[in-house]
Image 1 (tube, rainbow, N blue to C red):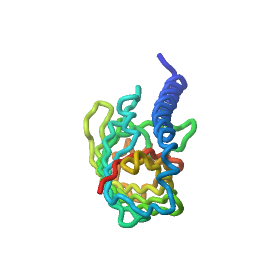
Image 2: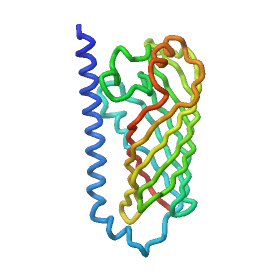
Image 3: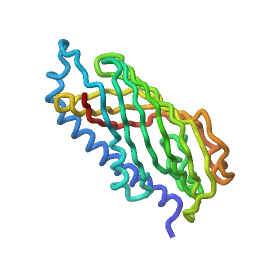
Image 4: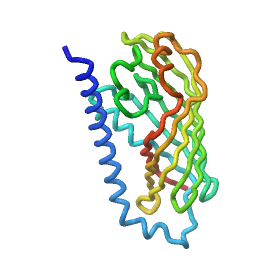
Length: 225
């Protein structure tokens, strides 16, 4: 029978391999765009495409994760008010089996910190993005999310609700004459409100912060007029 230490090591190795696969794909996109950047960021270019649709590269985890796939679906619909101000609406769902406040380290996805089941969430996020300098941007996301608490037998035992905010900074990369774009980012996530959880879930969740520091983002999208 595997020990707790060997189980954690397996989970950690799997998680690292999954992230490497996703990041390698992201780096490929960034490298492919490098030859186009100079031409697309001339000082004379003040035009921009107003509408876009997008998603996140982390959905790749649905198929490459050997353990604990997130079952994620993510759709982003956006509008550029000006060349520097952007608003968007995101529809997303995913599931997770560990408290979202566990920092990177030995407790991250450790077996002893796992929920007795998982939480499935359905969220609608309203986002505001502001370009600060060149293509560097800051973004604030506010998301109400509806939750289903599912036990280890796959049975839903309760419903819940939370407000989940994301405060991020990132860089906007234009691709193929601004038809496509890619936005790597890093964020702080914050849960200012959580409804009452089932006691078995709450006991685990209460051990951790309502904040998470260092959440990576790998968003991409398609621009149109």
